[in-house]
Image (tube, rainbow, N blue to C red; front, side):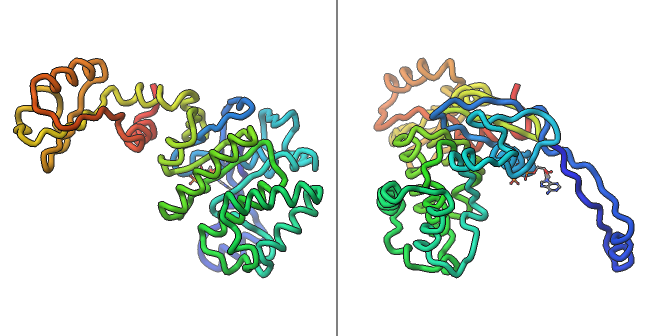
Amino acid sequence: MTYRAPIRESGWKATVGSVFRRRHREVPAVQDVSFTLGPGEVVGFIGPNGAGKTTTMKILSGLLHATSGQVRVLGHYPWQRRADFLRRIAFIRGSQPVGGSQELTVLDTLRYQRLLYEVPAAEYAHNLEELTDLLELEDLLHRQLRALSLGERMRAGLALSLLYRPEVMFLDEPTLGLDVTGATAIRRFVAEYARQTGATVLLTSHYMADVASLCPRLVLIDEGKLRYDGKLDELAARLSPYKLIRLTAPNVDPERLRAAGELVESSNGTCVLRVPREEVARTTARLLTELDVADLAVEEAPLEVVIDRAYREGVR
Ligand SMILES: Nc1ncnc2c1ncn2[C@@H]1O[C@H](COP(=O)(O)OP(=O)(O)OP(=O)(O)O)[C@@H](O)[C@H]1O
């Protein structure tokens, strides 16, 4: 996919000149990105800023026509934007969860959506009740869209898009700007919706908590190219050959632990050791037999660390 972007120079002369002499440049946004989603899969679609995620989602939902390549979603060519295709998908953006007139109330917008997507009355009543419950919309229904907070807009946006029970959801940063409670509620809702309806979900997010809690599989792109498509666990194992042993042993001098692994943290009797994966079992057994251990946990490296490494060094 290549964008044709106008070149605009600064200054009034250049602005006037550009009216008569338009110049453009080609911006390659997505190249050779190829992947398939199975029914019911929840897949994290990640990459650094400008990687091409939103562009890909716009192509998949039919908002952009790719300049080359092939895309099929539910057997349709998305760019045709046929009504029977649009009724089966939803493209939800955290940056603009609800469009249309901001003067309308949430309930009026839902009613309008019902007409637009031709949702039968009984189905509308049932879905509305369920969504109101799951998204805690009761207090929002009679409020104008323009008066909603960021988190409330996202909940209303999800209700609008899911009112017609789409089979495929493209979720572009659904937790953008939300506080911890709001983001957790959205995550829980997406997981529950996918479980209940068997919907396929492609989700982009810069918050690794979204990815870790929802997506067993990751598709990673960078500079418009596919860099990884596989299990989240396997990416973590590949990029982080270490695990962390978190150990609480109040009577042990942390210096004694250095022989067991790299000491990365030590405070109030709790230490964190970084240990090569293949040595974790042996080291754990030794620590438990040799020391007076009150608590011990083995953890993966934080996902942020793994993904940061994938972005900076690539995936080999
Ligand atoms: N309308 C446009 N015209 C020209 N170039 C564009 C346009 N939209 C996006 N691009 C460029 O295409 C590339 C991919 O952008 P895209 O928005 O798909 O990235 P992204 O992965 O969603 O980024 P982010 O995580 O920052 O939202 C970027 O280089 C961007 O500048």
